[in-house]
Image (cartoon, rainbow, N blue to C red):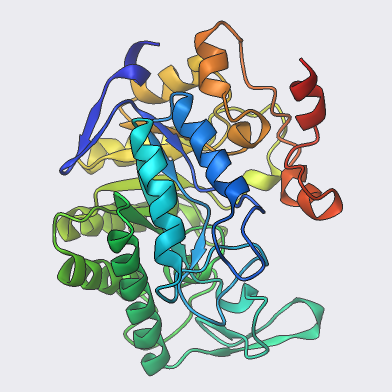
Length: 353
């Protein structure tokens, strides 16, 4: 498999290869936000089939911040046992296990008090109010406390979800953040909530506890200026001791189905300018795609939807399959609600082979 099989050191975390299972909501959690046997089975399959680093689906850090009914909750200690059961089996299979922490902000489904980085009209006639500074500090503490629970569960680290219009990304992105206080306006202020969370986690969990970050590489508002903002933010992430930054984007759901390796050109420029470990997710469907990302100087390569379609895709590629059977149709975001137990429209056909 070439470069993808090379191990990598992320701080004191050693990963057996360069392949990341990017955070992906599984629809397999229980209604009360606990890990289920089906969730453990999914992680068991992934870790037995050549993934180096597994990042969980987004886990909710606070009541009033859940994005999905089946989302795993990490806002109290009841989460620890379930996460430990997954961490233990993933480690037995030789993979690293990182828990993604997230707050849905105004996209939350478990509150009628919609709060956002700034006040705005939402869909379906709803309105979001602006978070106060005190509430921002409370949210920061929720992230830090959740990270401590993850560490207690024996996971290898946490990833902060600051992409895809969830709350942290809305602070970072000038499309959403028009605040005029210390958490808005210039790039330093927009990144402040992330910086304070990272510092808080290191203070509570130790500097050696890996903190990863997922962030959009682009924006819909003055994207050229945002690229320079990204250089600053990556530099800050390095200064703060972030272990790995995973680059995603704002428009991946709308790209053509045959588009491949999204965002690579910008990722190359950012990696050239900021010397810190990066991974790239989006449109990676084959061994050739993986090698292309790594040959460009990106340290790791992430996939999401292909692992929904084929949890054993790495084994399949090693055995000669040309590319993932994923159609990039995005129906994995809805099919579980229409057909409980299914995660991909190709699932039944693939299982019959």
